[in-house]
Length: 387
Image 1 (cartoon, rainbow, N blue to C red):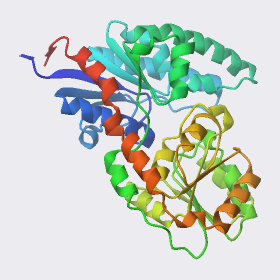
Image 2 (cartoon, rainbow, N blue to C red; image 1 turned 120 degrees about the vertical axis):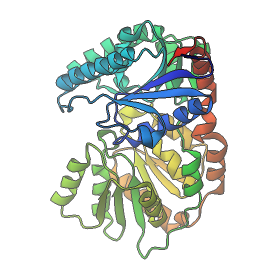
Image 3 (cartoon, one colour; image 1 turned 90 degrees about the vertical axis):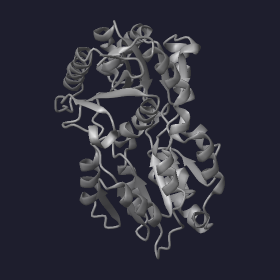
Image 4 (cartoon, rainbow, N blue to C red; image 1 turned 180 degrees about the vertical axis):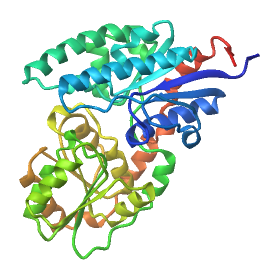
């Protein structure tokens, strides 16, 4: 039976939504938009079980390999996983898809779906973060850029999250500007409603919190070093990630007692931790300077004081806000000095209404997806789908 009013669209990601909240946060407004425009939405991801009931999609989990820490072996595993995902999607007979990355291998293997209408959602230019000093990674980075430049010609449109990515796609990958949409990261309307109501903390000691993914890019051992120098300040590291074990072991090896690791927590508990915090800390290693951590939008939604270590895109974005300090990344002394200045001047004792207003106006995810997804919807409506 042919149903003229219901078309099919698929979203494809090689990351598991269950353990990667940033991916779920990115895709949820996309899925919601397409559902509201009368599409049957499917999701293909590397989750280990069906998430159909949780996120209102027809979900096909495609379990990937357990990732190795070695660069070459991990790259091969991700290459294989990307092929498995795209082949599974191809078998579904859905014509139009949005491939969302940070996994470069989904882009590199788009030849598998060359007969489909493909849109690309770039959340991170991961191949460009590879080291310029390690020979293997430098060669791979050069090769990856060449492959990306070729494969991106296959897509109908590209979404990026910030101006740095826009300039890269426009000037390095040579994509026509008419094909590029800027869909910034941000917070969902539901998240913002809760975050903006967070109150000023009432603590005996100052509490500095990092809330988010604990990865290599964040290099949170530097926060442990700062905690060692500030024994009268309490530090919380809220969340999980592939670098948590190393950071926690480093903390224990130094015998530091003023740092609390919570592990992964529910959203309700996350809101509670925001309420207990005086200063919100975030950092990105300088080689990731083209990225804008989506966690910063959460931080800014609370109006609380933000201390950020990093350069590039995030520094430029934070310049549009108040109630924040930007320092050099990976420098414990600068963290200590900044915390002392913030607390000495009681800068943490007020909430920024301006920051909340900017987030509400410019960085609500549901409000920012339309420019890109309108193009996707037009492609999805070109032909009726057979149920």
